[in-house]
Image (cartoon, rainbow, N blue to C red; front, side, top):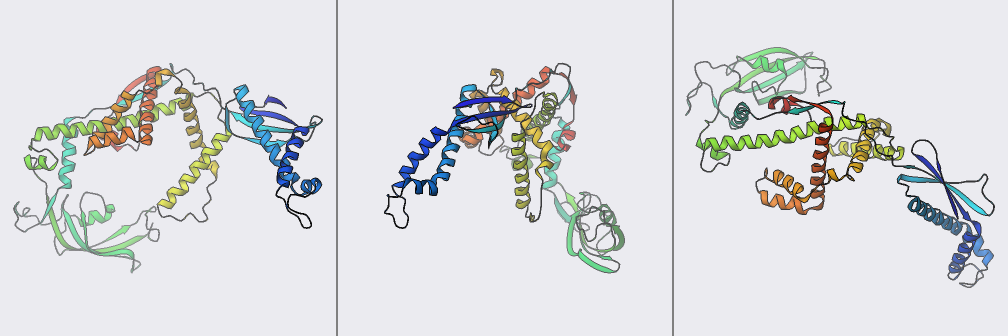
Length: 446
């Protein structure tokens, strides 16, 4: 049996396998004899069929099996002997022209993994985002918590906090309860009517024109106004149309936020009610949150740079596999959102760009893993696990989960390695730091 490997274009290779026909016939005859022990046919006792009859009935199938086994074995041996790094699965086909005498000839076409090369990053300009938590950020976080604990009292009625003042009309921050009905061309439409509907002014949960119309109204007031639905409105039947709304105010309530005191701190888990300790814990949590967001943002920048500076071809077979995975994941996501996928056709090619990025980065990271400087130690994994576990109510239990669950530990190892790669990219390039406020960072879609 002889094996010849040819280089086609780029990553494509072709391996030609010649298998002696005598070798195949010998094995076929051996298997036919085995098959003949149990074979049956009308007029013959079991195990007494003539060889010619066995050949006619089972020969072609057995020959195909033997040739397939020999091809796979020869291919695997050639890969081991030559050290070829095969990417994806080979495609086998019979060679009918110029096959050597007395041989079955087959070719295996496949791709090899590329030699990963990244262009020099020394002249690559890159921007690394940094930030810090200010006391104003802590104040803002506390205000968000306070707003979640807001209590509402009806304007004009006495309460433990007063009556809200002489102005009984709806103002910013007030919660208003209304009945409303909307009509288009004088006809009520689906979803355009409600009773005892509540919303808070200033939270922008309603369309701007609707919310604006509610300002300045008091209990029992009625207001009629026009509202034009945006063309992109989720209610397709009314999108782009103008409706006439009538709202009747049932109740106007003014907000009271809890004071920042010991009781407030105890509600956030500070047993002794120390407000300063509460602020320090909030600051610590904010620091961890922005650290994770910074890591994600700067990782995306570093990965973009690696993809741009990558100088190697991508195996077509790996791209094909990745495109199909992305397509299947998209369909599964649509199903999980209770959206019908019947009749939906998603050509794999629409995921080509995303697949190229993922395959490229996968090959880069597979190459980096071989480099000693990107090795991940147990201590590094544990440190990352402790950091993540600290955000849970029972950190000891979560630490044990992260360190002893195989999949979770692998995820942590990947996270640590990614961080090493990101640091390496910024160290290699012409990096400038860009300060971004916490509010700007939190507003980004990462």
